[in-house]
Length: 122
Image 1 (cartoon, rainbow, N blue to C red):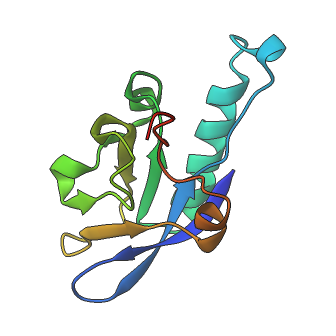
Image 2 (cartoon, one colour):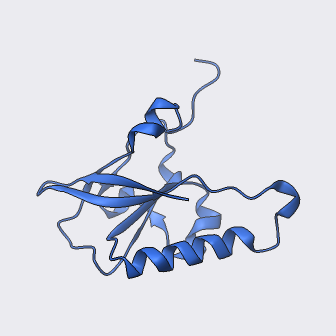
């Protein structure tokens, strides 16, 4: 559910996490399973002193967990194919003000072309 990733900050690379992939079978939607998974996972990461968690997802859903648009907080998307509103971040107490910069997705996301949305008409 969480994938180790990097933040390319001006001072140095910072270990961060990406919330992806996350899925609940459609027949089990609306039962709180996804919310419980996200809350539990974020609690574990907070205990492990992760400074940041990024995701690409629906702001209407993920804002309830404390995620906010990353662009307005000094972070850059790893791909221009990610819609601005979908690029989100949550900052934990270990986050320091100098930790800004570009989110760098782990290699498997690139290998499987799973970063951002492809334009089917391109």
